[in-house]
Image 1 (cartoon, rainbow, N blue to C red):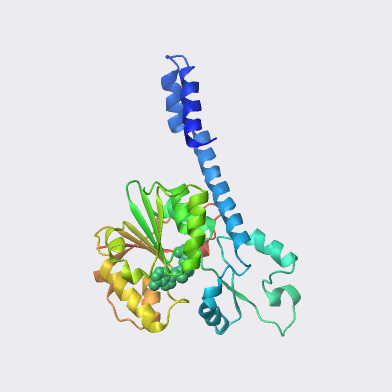
Image 2: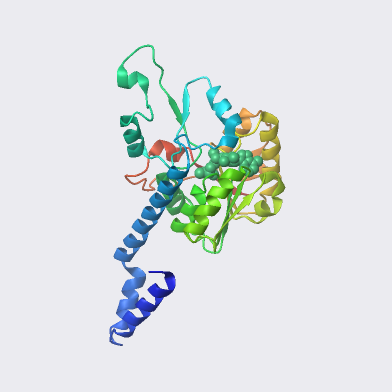
Amino acid sequence: MDLQQAQRTIINLLAQVSPATLPRVIHWMRNSSEIEDLIRSNADVLLNCIADDLRSSLPVEAMVGSENQVKEIIQSLQRPTLHVDAFLYDDDTIDTLCEEGKMSRNYCTSCGSRQTAPIDFISHSFSVAELKFLFQQMLPDLSGKTLVDVGSRLGAVLYAGFVYSSASKLQGVEINAEFCHLQERIIKKYDFSDRIQVFNSDICSQSSLLNHADVVVLNNVFEYFLDKEGQIRAWVFIMENIKKTGSLIVTVPSLEESLHKLQMNIQIDKWVEKVTLSPDIDLGSETDEESIREIHVYRVL
Ligand SMILES: C[S@@+](CC[C@H](N)C(=O)[O-])C[C@H]1O[C@@H](n2cnc3c(N)ncnc32)[C@H](O)[C@@H]1O
């Protein structure tokens, strides 16, 4: 059933309710936890469908042909490291792939041999659980607001923002054209185009998007993708252009860590203040506390 058919069916149904009962039915629809649960589980199902779709369009390592330089950077890391995209592969899916021999987790603990090394996992996307936590617990109500995801890659932040938040605009900027085509295909297929837009561009030529954003997401955005000079240039541009007072910046890792690694001597406390998570926030059963602690939120001064 599409939107118009659903609207007609609901109106027809409500027209059959007795006038005395109608206010109570409307009240129930607005406040019902059953409807809230239905909306939430629908959102999860939709994101799983998108992940399925993307998995079938990408190789297991979820990297594209034009990312040779990124693959080289990962291969040159000191410890053996594998890219596993957390939006596409949750722990259960990784277990299945390991059973099928398509992926290995941790050689040391699984076979006991002293000659094998543990594999480090890195992900170029947030997992569904992290995104759910970000939009439902960490960020405020985004009604009427604009979110910009810098380096939107598969579009995970944008799709999750669509289903878990009321943000009016979700804008992704991605330098890699192959990933932009992939995002465009998903946006069209799932009818997201009224709120999601993707720009195939270097963020350093998108000052206006940053100037107007209410929330900017920077998830491990430059480290594996740009050389040191490129990263410094990009961070300087980010700092000069996210300047709307009260706007929020979401980063992984912390701004302090990213800038320190690049030996950038910048006083970020003149630009932003840290937003701390309430200590009694409910992490829920789906959320891995360690990964949530990696997500940092700042407010622009
Ligand atoms: C780690 S991924 C982030 C994925 C996504 N934001 C998420 O959280 O799921 C970083 C992405 O940033 C892109 N990127 C790197 N430098 C960029 C730049 N200067 N402008 C736009 N995108 C960039 C990379 O191509 C990569 O796809």
